[in-house]
Image (cartoon, rainbow, N blue to C red; front, top):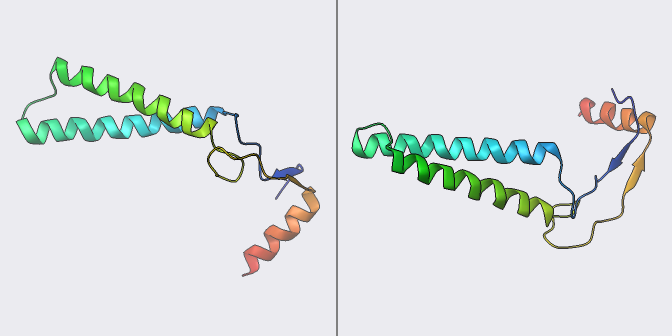
Length: 104
């Protein structure tokens, strides 16, 4: 169960975490896989050098867009709004809530 106290919701507006960058890379990778498959299906050939350039540009655009979206989102997922008040939850209270939720 919970070992440490946590804050709910976490910080948001103007904050980036490593997970945001990793998620943007995953999104870009999946998009490029789909672009590659689309090229193979349409032309029947492996992507050309020009196709790889387009995929690289799309990767950069996806990463930048995702990170900018996360920079402008507050701790409750609202775009360009102030962070909502943070509630401090003790580890014991969090354990009680988790136990109660797992019973349902």
